[in-house]
Image (cartoon, rainbow, N blue to C red):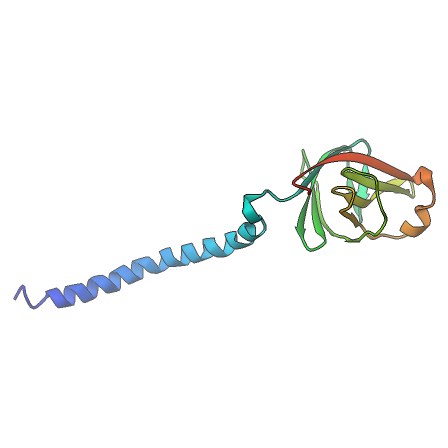
Length: 159
């Protein structure tokens, strides 16, 4: 009688093994799905570009107000950036447009004073790579030097 059961035991074990491995396979698949965008965003093991800046005044991005302080800005997608405070919970994700204006060398953020508030309007990773943050009255205020403030920044992996 012991020889009549081995085939059934093998079948039962394989069913148990496949039932136990299903959650494992699901977890591995989920991990791959979650890490795939991160792996593709960092070709050749390079870190993504990151701008760090100390802004000496309160400012706005769109309708979100930020206090003076240390900030990081990272690209998150095609013409989309994420600004985050070094301390605190302040953060915002924003869309940008292309810039065709030649610029001075170096990373920096450019603010325009509108209605007694500084608005983030441009960010530059280097002299050739910049982005414009859309908003009202940008074209009108470009001609007024007193309303434009450039804040130097540093950029890692911004070749």
